[in-house]
Image (tube, rainbow over all chains, first blue to last red; front, side, top):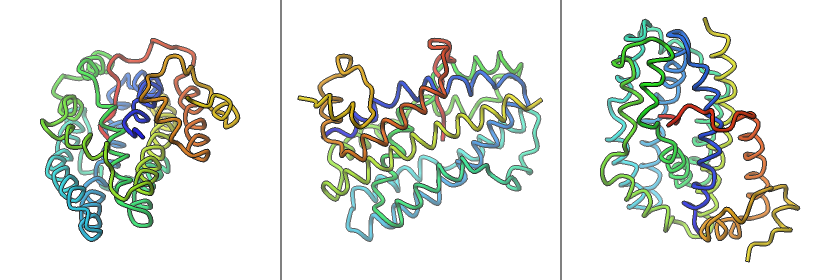
Length: 215
Length: 64
């Protein structure tokens, strides 16, 4: 059984589905809305990873716990990229924490909380693995700078995520190739990835509608 | 060998000839429920992408 092959099967469709969302980012206000949504999502990442590492350790899954702990180190500081980009795009980062995230955002993140607490933390590995296959391309930030008229310095969040950190991807793929908890672990891992794919496409559509309505 | 009739019965419409051995094996290993979910997601992806294939922003991705 190959979970990576299933993830690869979904990746092209996700890239196509993201296209209309990105094409709607044509003004600084629209880009700020995208950044605000990114803030809503990334603020939840630290808590998810901390809980996943803790629960994995409790289950005796040392390799999984170590990978989540390493990912936690990797994610530190990314929130400050979003805030800096938001300011560079003309926004006040101090307002981000007061936002009420949209339901599609809550569903995308909330599914992972559910699987983590009521199934197995390996679900979060499926979530992250799918996102790893959907990193921003090298030309995306420049394309958005042209579309919005904003300076290149307003896209640190995107440029900082183009390349995976050295060694992290290989360690992730090794865990995917032999997920813990046997067949149940395989099914939870798959469920985590499928929930993320469905959550992403719903968020793409919801955000596209909001972006097209922004000034 | 991938059971095409099973996939079709569960609503998954794929060009199996375009898939590699690993992907076919991955499909074979999925439960009926997982296939149904995958089929539903693919329909949503197609709807979200629209009819402008090839016009997506090059290198589009997310950081979430």
